[in-house]
Structures are given as C-alpha cells and as structure tokens.
Amino acid sequence: MKVIAVVPAYNESIRLAGVLQDLRRFVSEIIVVDDGSSDCTAVIAEQSGAIVLQHLVNRGQGAALETGTQAALERGADVIVHFDADGQFCAEEIPAMIAPIIKGTADVVRGSRFLGKRSELPVLKRRLIMPVGRMIEELFTGVALTDAHNGFRALSAVAAGRLHVTLDRMAHNTEIIREARRQDLRIVEVPVTIKYHEFGQGVGGGFTIVRDLLMQRWI
Amino acid sequence: MFLPIQIFLLLAALLAIIFGVRRFLRHEINFLALLIWLLVWLAVGSVAVYPEGSTRLAHALGVGRGTDLLTYISLAAIFYMLFRLFLRQERIERDITKIVRHTALSDEQKDGTGRAS
Picture 1 (cartoon, rainbow over the protein chains, first blue to last red):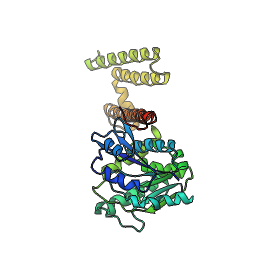
Picture 2: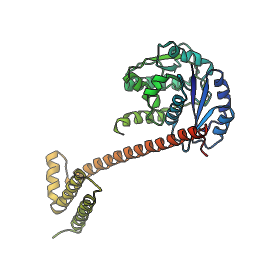
Picture 3: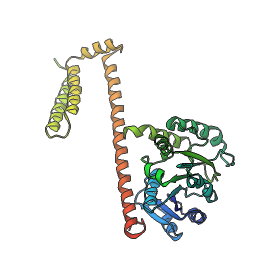
Picture 4: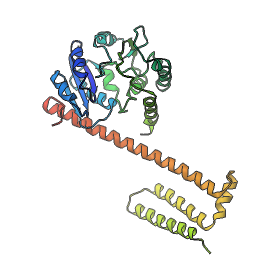
C-alpha cells in the first residue's frame, strides 16, 4: 500500500524540516509543493528527502494541493494524505486517518477537531467562527460534518482521480467535500488534534472562501 | 437650439456608434454585443435630443426625475461591468495556475524533481 503525503508549502522554511521528519515515519513518499516561496522552503524540502515540485509563482493552497495530488497519482499512490507544512497536524494520526480507506469503508477522510480529541482552539474560533463555518459548509456541500475546513485529509486513489480542485485559494476544502458528495463518494471523519501556532483563517478569510464558492459556477 | 451638453452627448453617441460598427466589421465583437452597444448609445442620443423623454419614462417607472433614472441605470451597468471584469480576471488566474502546474509537473518528469531551473 503506497501512501503519499502531499504538503503544500509557502515560505515554511522554519517549521518544514521538523514536519517532514515526523511525516517520513508514516508514509511511503512525501511530495512538497513549494508554492512560489521566496525563502529556502524548496531547498529544505529537498534536503529532507522529499520530492519537490515548484510553482514558479504563488498560486494558493488549493492549487498546490491539486498539483501535488496529480503528481502523487502519477507516482502510483494508493492513498494520498493532504498535510499542512506549518506543524499544526500530528503525523502520528496518519494511520488512523488512512485506516478507513485501507479497510475500504471510505473514499475521503477528513480530520475533525470536534470528535473526542481536544484541540486548543482560540475562544473566538471555537465559539463564533467554527459554528458559522460549519453552517456555511453544510449549506454548500449538503453534508453535515462536525468540523469545517479541516485541512488534514486522506483520499483513496480512486477519489483523488475523480476530485479535481479548481479553487486555487482556501475554498478547495469545501469544494472537495461538495464534489465527493456529488459523486457519491463515502466521506468519513476521524478525530484529530490541531496545534495552533497562530490564529489561522479569520473572518476575512471566511468571506473570501464564500465568495470563491459562489463565483465558481460563473467562471 | 441645442445646449452645449446636448451637442457633446450627441457627438459622443455618434462616435461611439461608429466605433462599435467598426469593431463589428473587424469581427472584434459579435452581433449581440453590437446590438446592445447601439441600443445604449441610441438611448443616450435620444435623451440628449429629447430630455423630457427620460423624465416621462422615469415617471412611468415611479422614479422622480429622468436624471435619477439614468444614474440608477448607469450604476447597475457599472456593477455589471465590474462583475464581468472580476470573472475575466478569475479565468485568467485559473489559466495561470494551469501553466504553473504544467511547468511544475513536467520539470518533475524531466529530472525527477519539480525544481525550476
């Protein structure tokens, strides 16, 4: 079973080496997509033994994930794990994340901060942004999940081959779930812990996500 | 006797119509675009020659003055154009992503890494 991690990275030279070191123990290969970084992200990724793909200019996390996913499929991945470069996810949770795919009970697995495990979320995020985010995501996808926009994700090769990210920025997370639902793929959530180094998506980011999702049908 | 603003608007409409027809003859715009363009500038010309007409139309629609109606219509048109511009920009962004992705993937196939040289 070939498990390939896809790590989109934009100016992540500080945390990337540690993240890749942890990751290596749980996956067969790592693909880092350097999304037009101006620091030495690509060099660090290469030194860490990852396969490095380089976007010449910054195109956004969704675009980088799609590039990495296509490369992973070309390399014969059975399972693809989407993993952030900033050290917020725990690589130790990868076996639990990919288990439903290996067992054949799911096509798309998404991490959830609200299924038993306790993530230290900022209060504003827990009380206001997350409930609204969940509601909006359900509105767009038709799927009621316990978390919104959790970037820790695993896809079977079949699902990855069918789901194409067209939204370059952050709205890809909802787009993947919406497409998965449209194509009758099985979506499962697995409890994960997220370590917060910084606030992450705020209200402004949320507006951009909604705008991108609304505009998608016109473009 | 025409007022200076009426002469200016008439000339502007005339030039715009000539410009539109030339673009159509050069196959730069389609017939529908030409039709919309002609309608807009014929309307401008008519309002310039017969300003009371716009007031009458405004009254019929429940708007106080003809100039107010024109302002509303212009605003709506500007917003629509902004929306079209936004969509066009997003399409260009997507095309850029396609090119950037293609480069990254073909570099990877060439030398085993996706590093741009």
